[in-house]
Image (cartoon, rainbow, N blue to C red):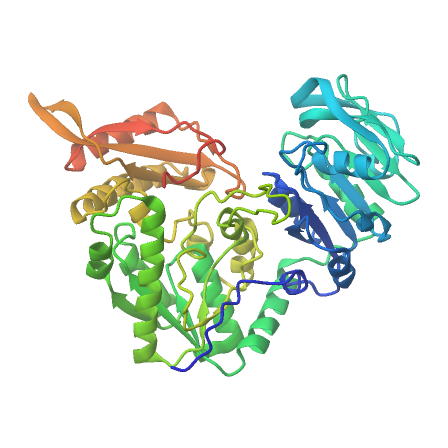
Length: 540
């Protein structure tokens, strides 16, 4: 196979924003390191307008080429007066594009345009009542006294020339400001979070009224554009897809099959880390119900051997990613040739796998790498495929909408997210055959009981984790020394943030009793009540 050594994951802002944008209707979010930047993008997409997060270093020239209808400056962990604090190019204020600064973005705007920002006498964190001084434009139909979410230790002490006060709180005199003539706005609160009751109304005002956007970002529009771009990119070449059976890869398989038909080859690599009975179920569904051929490759021994003695979670991901590519390349020799490798990478995967963003001039850090994801981490530099990732700019809920639109059954559309490395990262420490069998059996109990009570769709994820320690127990008057199982059941909208689920005690009791009595090697069950942040959804 003499394909070019190319990775199609590095995208210029122009290319990155092209997918699904049919008429240049878009809002750009310039990211200053906020944990909520992607949430802003998601909220805008809920208005059916395309949005994308770009670095705060994006130049005015790049923005002119993109021609966004509006620009939003995100929050961030810095103070604008700190040495090394991130700053955008001041020429953006003269682009003639409506701008909304959020928290740090507002403070940066104020500093750049001649106002003053200082450490507040009293910081403001959490819920605050917003009192409206000017109910027009940005705050149209936003109720006076409504709750907004604050998170700041600095405040605007003097507005720039040409700005007017829109709203205040008890502790923040300038909670929202505007230069109506230049269509430049700032809010000290976070309208994108669910705690801000009037936040979506404010975002809609900015998107529709101020930026004059039309709601063209729809599922049907995305599918149409994605199919067109897949066909244009792939041409008559063949595509190899790593099928896992989850909503991401299944939606991708359906989308690719619609776009290129039999030029798609789905390969299911059984690495031995899937849940009990899932490989068999996957093959039956695709062969008998979907009529999409799937090549099965049993690589369980290979993966388990490669992870022997490995305990570091990042090393696990790296090895699994490396082995996947190796298996794909071997499969391609038998089934190929192939020029493209398709992956179901999503936007949150890309975000959380981003390397630390260090400005070469100031040295400040903006975005911190949390962990690598299987879909975007561990790819060798000499990859012999080009990557095609049509879902790369979608959130999970958007993928589900696409799946429904192209005929994917609810059984898969509503399937809980499952990590690419599978159970290998739900076993802390070394992955062994014994531990895999224990975790599979425990995980099956969790799924059975959650399904039996009709709670499956109430939770974002529900699964078991095996800890590499043993504790003393007693069963049948005999001393035991066995593993503990951790239950992780959470609620979430998109996986970016999450909260632990308040599962009824009687359900937890049944799950615990069944695991201890039915799963050999386990004598203790505990429940994880950690939200994200500070914890992550997965333990590794």
